[in-house]
Figure 1: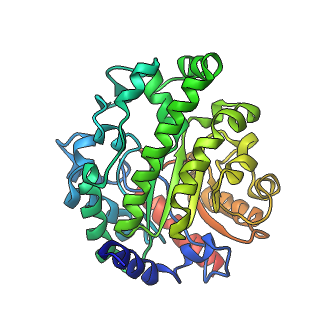
Figure 2: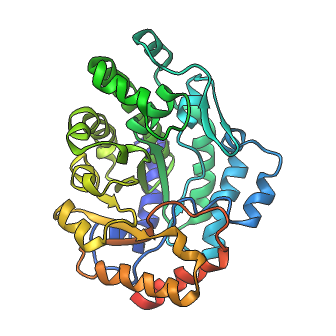
Length: 354
C-alpha cells in the first residue's frame, strides 16, 4: 500500500459513518445531509475578502487559499460535506491549454479545438501537473476530520463545449456541428477528455477526497438519443476510471429532466436533480439503486424565511420514499444570496429530519 493509499484509507475511515456518506450508500441517516453547489463562493463576504486581487485560476493553484475557501462554508453553515474549491477548466489549463476565466463571462479558450490536428494539444494529465491539488486536499482532510470532502471535475461534454465554442455558448452550434457532422472526431475528442477527467478525479481521491461529483453543466442541451450515442460512453469511461476506489460518484447536470435515467445509467451512485423535476418523479425516471441529490430552486432563497421552509418541506416530502437523499440546491448558490439564508436552511433541514 502506498502512502497515498494509506492517506485515502484514513480519510475514508474518518468520514465513512458521516450522514453524507451514508446517504450516498442509501443507508439510514441521523438526519438528511445538506451541502450546496457553489457553497464556497461569491455569496460569502469572507470569500470575496480572501480572493480580492487574485484571479480565479490563480486562486485554484494556491493550496492555502483553496483550503481556506473550501472550509469557509463548513464553518459558517454547518454543512455535512465540503466541496473542493476549484474550477472545471483547471485540468485543461494544467495540460497547457491557453484559456482564462474572464469575470462576468466565464472560461474563454484562446484557440478553440475544431480539427483533428487540434487534438494533439490535449495531452495526458499527470499528478505532477496538479501537485497543488494534492497538497491542498492533504491540508483540507486534516482540517475536516469526519466531514467528507467532495472532489469534482467537469464532464467530457461540458469541457468539449468550452473547447469547441471557445467559451460559454447559448446554442452550442459549433459543438453540435462537430458532434453531428464529424462523429469520429467528436468521439475521439470526448475520449481524450474522459481520460484527462478520470486522471484528475484519481488525483483528488488518492489525496483524500471521500466522494467525487461530475458536473455536466451544458448537457441539458442534448436530446436523450444524442446523449446516449454521443456522450454517455465518455461519461461512463470517467466513472469506470474511479470505480475501483469505492468512493461515491455523483453525476449532475442542468436542465436534464429528460436525461435523468441516462445520467444514472452512465455509472453514478448518486444522481443530482435540478429544481425542474420533483424528487419522487426523478426517482421514477432514474430507477432503483441510486441515491438522489437536490433540489430546491436557488432563487427561492431570496424569498421570506417561511417561503424557503415551505419549499424545503416540499423537497423533503418528495424525497420521503427515497432510499438515499442528499439535500442540495437544484443548481449553484447565486452570488447575491444572503449567507444567513443558507445557514438557516441547513439548520431547518437538520432539525426537520432528525
